[in-house]
Image (cartoon, rainbow, N blue to C red; front, side):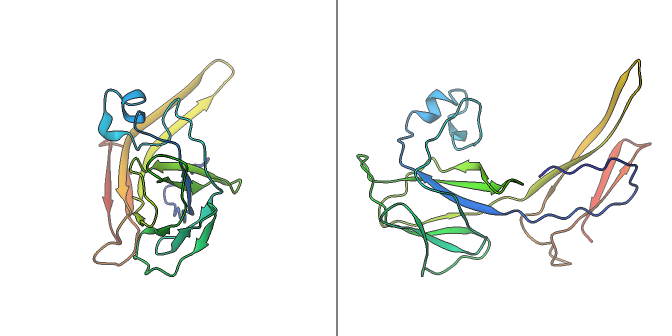
Length: 196
């Protein structure tokens, strides 16, 4: 999510609701960690990464947190009767049999773009076999910063302050909301962020 204020805004309220989706691939990924991430094999699931191409096996299907979908025998998503898990995207059952040696699939989690399509944000490096289920909990972390710039006929300038990060994955214990109040102290050059 990217949002920008084009005018001086001493106080602003920014809201968004991410829309997640699921997809799958049956492409074998054992060499992915050594080929793409040879310097850090434990992070092979990071998507997108430069140069990574994944052949999708099906169509993206919206899946909200707390919703459960099954992957059907023909590779299409269907509503599941499995029990939901609050805060998670859940594949209740993988009913798709592949032509791979292990007969499993790798699930992808994506976030919806303004155009309506989905961009992958996570590729599960573990195969989910026939009859198995899977759970995914998106981590809602956001960064913001103070930035100013101007353009004249002779110069373009950009001034950028330090970044601040907020974790919105779990609601605030006191307020029960996923909101924060953040103030940038220009003189001190730092952020003060609190929950309401």
